[in-house]
Amino acid sequence: MSGEVPAVSGLGGPASWSPISGGAEGVGPSEVPPDPFSCLREVDLFADLSPAEMDRMDQMAPATLVRRGQLLYSQTDPVRSLFILKSGRVRIFRLGEDGKALTLAILEPGAVFGEMVLVGQRMYDSYAEAIDDALVCRLGTVDVERLLLADVRVAVRVARILGERVGELEDRLTDLALRPLASRVAVTLLNLARLPRGSGPFARAPEVRLTHEQIAGVIGATREATSRVLSDFAERGLVRQTRGRILIANPSGLRRLGRETV
Image 1: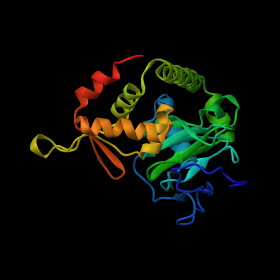
Image 2 (image 1 turned 30 degrees about the horizontal axis):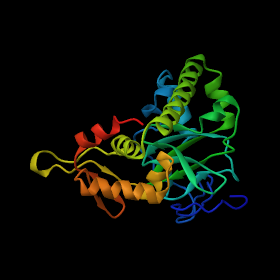
Image 3 (image 1 turned 180 degrees about the vertical axis):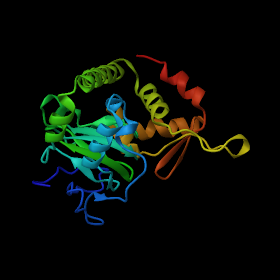
C-alpha cells in the first residue's frame, strides 16, 4: 500500500491487495484454487445475468484469499473496485480525528461492497478489513463500467443497493441518538450472532466472534464502556465470554434490553 495506514487498535496490520495471480503467502491476498461455486451467482445484484454472462464475469473475478486483519482498501490507498464477499466477514469502518475507529458495517458472505465505484466514486474516507480469513472476488472499474453499468437490469439493482446503504446509515444514527449503551450492545450482539450449531442436547449457543474493541467500534462507544456492559451482561447470565468470542446465553433477555430507548 502506498503511504502509512494510521494505527488502529485491533488491526492485524496493513497488507497490500496483490494482483490476483501474484499474492504471496503471509503478505497479501492470494489466489485460491478454483471453486465450483461462483461468487457472482450468490449475489442478488447479478441475478438477471444469463449463465453465459455470469461465466464471463466469473473469469474476471476469481476468488482471492484475504487473511484476517488485512486491509482491502484504506484512506491512503483507495481502491476503485467492486468487491463480492464469498466467505468470512469484512468490517467497513472510518477513523475519527482521535484515531478511533467507527464501524459502519460488518459484512457477511454474499455482500457487495466498494459500491461507490458504481457511481464513479472512490472509497477515500473508509477502510475495509477482513475480520476472518475471507474469500473475496474483485471487479475492476473498467469491467464494472463496461459490463454492469451499461446493463439496465443491473443498474436498477445498483440503485436499490445504494438506497439500502443510506437506510442502514440512518438506522445507525437513530440508534446512536435514541438507545442507551446497554440497548445498543444488546441489539448489536443479536444482529452479529452466528446461528447455533447442532441440535437438541448437542446444540451450541449463538456466538459473536469480535473483540470488545470491535464491538465498541460498531456501536460508537469506548472499549472500556463496552467492556463494562458486557461484564454486566455476563453477571446477569445474558452472555458467556471466552477469549475472542461471546456466547449468547439468553437471547430473549437481550431482545428485551434492545427495545429500551433513552
